[in-house]
Image (cartoon, rainbow over all chains, first blue to last red; front, side, top):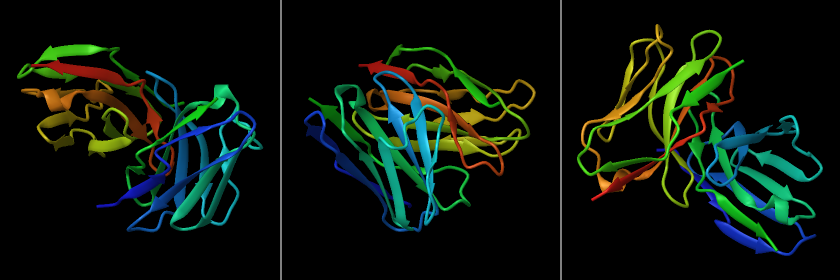
Length: 115
Length: 112
């Protein structure tokens, strides 16, 4: 079946630095990828939708200059958290689909801790 | 707009008990409905889905039936196991819309 690989699975960084998270579709081409943020014991909050070769569409309240999303190919999307602060600490999850699916395949998530 | 309401957890059951996790939705048109499961420290996995009224999705002993008249998609399992301990999310997607709308999730713990 479809597999989405997300890397790294966890990362600790210092406040003020930037962190890049990768999301790869391993055995299919993903025309659309989604980035979610999940707070402890809460549901997933959609941050942005990225389509290959075009700019990401951010949800209301998500800072596009802080959370940079690049979807340069049909198998790779990246999320860069710029100038990270402790309040950015969270579990970030990506998902990918061909656009023809009824559901999407999710990555295993990245736990970001900013100290 | 779309919304998904799940029963609040946490839910704790003994092994082999019967499980029901309620899910109701509000949507325009005729959405597809999903249950996702998240095991500790992992991302979400699609558990089952249904794309039209009266469809029954099933997987790993779990079942859910798309009830248009009650706008519900309740998750059931006849005999739960310790390995079913996880967080379960109900979700919907409207035809022609790429976005998934999630419920708040229900944490399930099964004790031996």
